[in-house]
Length: 275
Image (tube, rainbow, N blue to C red; front, side):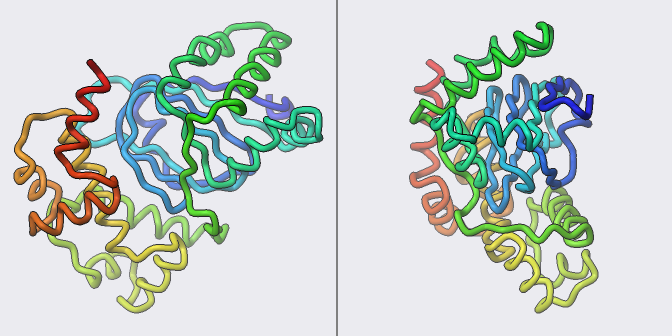
């Protein structure tokens, strides 16, 4: 199997989603069929839902993590592309697909409509013949390369230091935030958690993710707020405090900065979308 130019894997349990922040030389195309949580791609953090469809470039760090309160089974179909197939696809025969893979260095997230449109082809990839797999994969890539319904995730100048120790530290920070975001967190506390001084940790985190720790923390808290806005009828002030913010005005400013709108507008937009 390892010698094949691409492989298709079905993931259908929660443990497979709670995989650490990692990277690999293969390109990756992931369709989340049934799961919710937080997605990390490079230095980008965002809440994800069912029908999340993302293309990742080679050695771009990433992980999908289920939220701790999810009880339903998880599901995803993942396609891994080896370098020899990418070289063939980007050799000049498929210009649009070649441009798509160039964009994947930042991570490409496609709209839910696009995900639903190609969903049946993803499921057929799991059970069809090797020849038909190639045909289906080319059809999927062609559709993804010709749509404008996508967004780029990680910052354009993001680069990862491929270092095992650093990755372990980043994962430790992720887990710490996951377990403690609802309360006040000090820089000294999280620095001590990864056995660093405050100053060294601050430099390390900013260098690794190209953003300060507290920017990352606020983005995570906003992602959790989005989940509550969508899934509950809690008042916005309740949500503000439940995700760790101590000031309602500051919560509103952070929400507008990260989501480019108000919490109420976000809630109404989602409800309108599912009518």
